[in-house]
Image 1 (cartoon, one colour):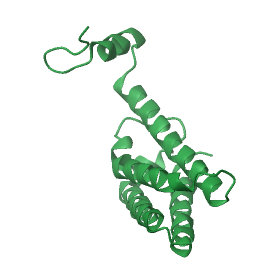
Image 2 (tube, helix red, strand yellow):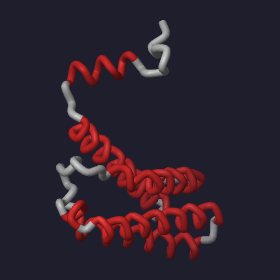
Image 3 (cartoon, helix red, strand yellow):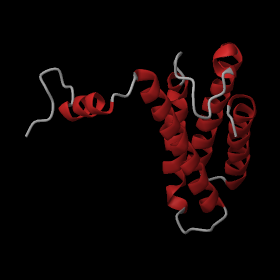
Image 4 (cartoon, helix red, strand yellow):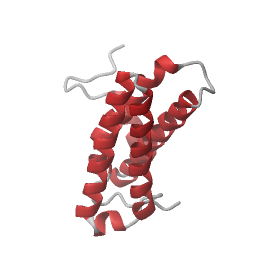
Length: 145
């Protein structure tokens, strides 16, 4: 059974949206929440690897790449009208500063991705510290804890 119509739209997605009655902003809030939760889960997995609590050092680059990908899409996760959950109103009240924080996150994520690919422990240690700090800096001002 083909679940795509002639325009490539998933009929299942349309049915789900119609039946849930989710508005665009509710959907945006939920999507942002799950995307940022994914970043957090990758960070937790990275910490387990770096602390050698799991024998999966070969997965480090996978997690680093995923965070870099998520950092790339982070700016579109906060559209106007999507206030809610942990996102503080300051995001939309101070858009220039918030955009700078997202740029810092993206730069730190790319640096960590490169460090993970290098395999250099000193580079990895420095880069994960900077990545964690970029997350903290943004959360301190723009996320309700």
